[in-house]
Image (cartoon, rainbow, N blue to C red):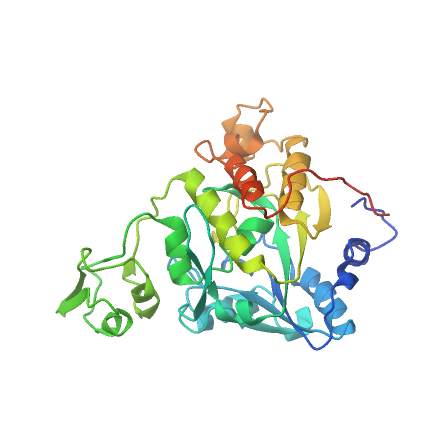
Amino acid sequence: MHTELEDSLLDKFGRLIDAAGIESIGMEKKFVAIKTHFGELGNLAFLRPNYSRVIADKVSKMGGIPFLTDCSTLYPGKRKNAVEHLYTANMNGFNPMSTGCQIVIGDGLKGTDDVEIPINGDYIKTAKIGRAICDADVLITLNHFKCHELTGFGGALKNIGMGCASKRGKMELHTSGKPSVNKEKCRGCKKCLEACAQSAITVKKKASIDHDLCVGCGKCIGMCPFSVIGVEMNEAMDVICCKIVEYSAALLEGKPNFHVSVIADVSPFCDCHKENDIPIIPNVGMLASFDPVALDKACVDLSQKQPMITGSRLYINSKGKKPDDIFNCTHPNTKWQTTFKHAEKMGLGSSKYELTEIN
């Protein structure tokens, strides 16, 4: 979207979502999940809550019941459970006064409240999605487009597939293995025993997991109050992208959805990091679409055309010479192209698009 100085950025944001057709979604008396990223505590690259407010006000005006949401993290940061997640959201400026709606953590108190949605994928048979997001009648995603150390870029599909997954869903996305216990930090509290339906966990002063019995459901990760059960994030980069696509397809099937991405402060790492480096390219603008695949592809293409910011990770990695692929240059082992190939195979959307500029 082209910007003019006479109007505020939020005025333009409102015109963008109107022009993209958000009002064509019937929202009267419907619960509308606005999926965003609250940013890890200390991170300053995440989208400000003001954007959320524009969407929430629009939904309310259309008779809907909006709520802002995200799911718990798999890693032990400051968003690993609902209490800490809400605290972090508040510290980063997200609250009912600033956003115009309530905040609901999608997968419950400990990240274990989810719904299994069947999907006939190459890698996933049932996607484990946060229950509150599944229960919503409509899904709107508000995406900070950026680089990502595992998927090359983070946009609408990652915000849906990875962001809406519960703890055990995130484990399925990140790893090809099974959870293990950090014996040095385990306190033998036995909380994990309550989570395991396979009797794979025993506690003799310290907990241990029998991988022959373990089915890799990951429920024990969310139950551990001391975050000493975890997984090695060892899934192949291309497989992660495919799994995210399949999770996205499972959630969006039959659910009205709309997606908005902001290409600004394009940081080299995910907003899950408590730190954020300088952006790799200048700010580009805002885009909206009913097709998350087309939206992500347009964001990728526009970003690829931008000049590098001197001193950024991209500039340093490329030794000051603009590369053909800014995402692979920023994170050389990623295979982001797989996302679009698999999304089209799954019928999730099209990487072909037409850009319409809104004044």
